[in-house]
Image (tube, rainbow, N blue to C red; front, side, top):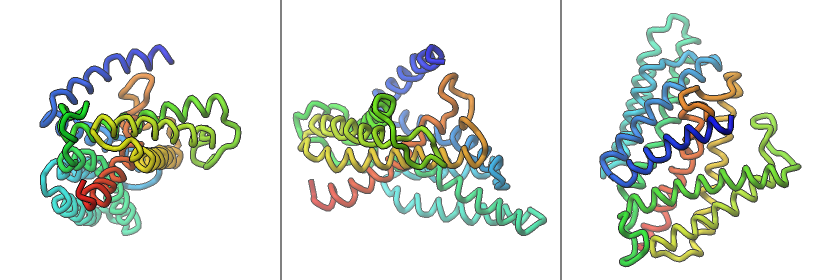
Length: 279
């Protein structure tokens, strides 16, 4: 299994790195493709969990919400896309003869579209991030890519550190009814790793490394919550993985679940703290 996971990573990581270096619009395309793939997996899980969600309609709505984040007026477009998704899902549910099943289809489709649609905040960060300080080591990436790199690196740091500390020191567990392997040692170890990497990334953007404490904690906690949220969905569907697209890794949703919560949190931090402070 480990050899299979490493082989998959050896193929996927260079592709993602190349797209990141190419910048927009290739990053936009990659995120939208990930949303489409994750959408099909999400709606398959919802149906397995007993929700009569519309897979095709829900996936299209997910992509629509995510794509709204790529525009300068993303918040307005995103709100409109989310509202339209709820309306279209409701209209689609009219075709179900049993009103209880129709309500289940409406709720499942609207929820799934909104859930996957959270990935659109990654594009929002790409569009609306503040500029890096002149002469900063990562200034060559530009504002958006620098902050997206911070997001990706911090989430990966949390996941990796949580795994290492959990395996080495994990005894006491939490939320065992959702994910039996989660431990407090993994949680605190993951947060420590997230803070360190966030501090390094912020220094590379020309900002104070001390800002890595709130950013690392916020992004790390959000990443853990995102992982648990997907675990709850899979447990409800009685599924081990969200899919089989990536050998040794499961599905696309298994790879991006942490980002679905971490991206909105970082986007909110930028909007409420960085932009409000004018720095």
